[in-house]
Image 1 (spheres, helix red, strand yellow):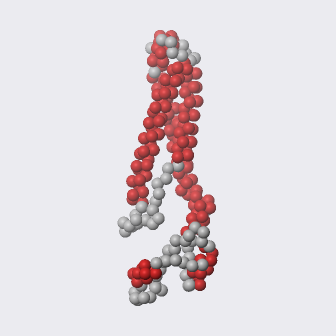
Image 2 (cartoon, rainbow, N blue to C red):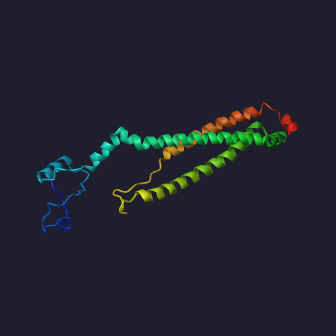
Image 3 (cartoon, rainbow, N blue to C red):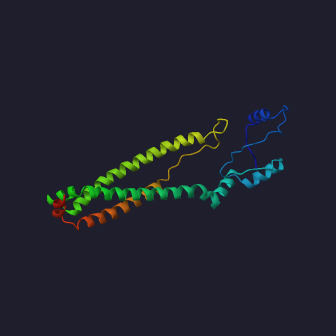
Length: 212
């Protein structure tokens, strides 16, 4: 195996970290960018023959991190639990809001029924109202979340000395979680909407208007 590098640049770096001119034995790190089809084992053996016995393979380190369930669960697990808890709270808040809105607007629905609207049409009106609220809420939440995420990463992406962290953080949105979560909340809302309209249908519009 062979290593292709810029000799002058390597010497310049060596002189920067060495107190003795021309002595590269004090260099503490050497970074190598290997070709995709390079034989990593042979290169490591060649480096060992040169006296560079402490070699860190970035690919092997990343693979070990990915395959470690404790490391994977530490960040992703906490975020997943938080995401599920947020979805539950959103669903509960949406159901409470739906029930309170229907209780306040019973007379309005009775009037709509008196002028000819069916229960299905009333349910469609409610569904359209909350669909608009849901779409606007999801869009605003994604935009605000990305903005806050970038602001937070701007504080985490530097060292104590104010220098950029290498490698830097990458802001990534799990769109699958967002879509699945929104679909789950929408399904819960649809079931609750049907159940609520069915409950309202047990009381006649005339009785509601007489009571009010």
